[in-house]
Image (cartoon, rainbow, N blue to C red; front, side):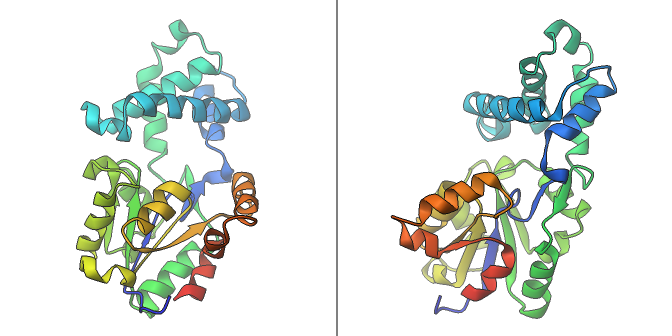
Length: 254
């Protein structure tokens, strides 16, 4: 990248941080156990992914377009997850309001999430040492701002652009254009911007569609990432060239 980078934007989940212990199901199972429900975390992980996709198909963007609050939207995911995991709906419904509230709140804090090892070092180097503006562009709901604070990295970002508040998701060009505006970059200077994320369509292609430089992060500890990295090697040299395996590697492109 020959143009000096003045703004770097990051995806959040899967790029800056991950579920604590690498699994969402563990915390769901822990909360369910308080109500006498014994379930394996691995089963909940599987059913969570299925339920998330199914609810998302009906209520896009965390319920933004349907008038649902993010808490109402997540309650639907939580309900579907436990029912698909084998809990009788008649047993679940009486405890669902408290159970879903507990889970919703837990996933607002560092109790549920942890930073990748290099995240804080990289953000500090970019923000405090190299004086580069930083922002977040994330397809998440408004809780992300509290998550970043709980993880103690909120101070590194000049702005947070969340689809659940903005009303538009990546890869829509509107959300990337809004990021340019928030970062003080004119649309004619998009090459001064670098976006990093873990989703090939939403992050990499979304940024490239507006002319922004992009890096696709595929961490080697993620089995799904390994498969994607392997698949990009033979026939997609440009895409493979712009794959990084941890955030430290982004310095090679500045």
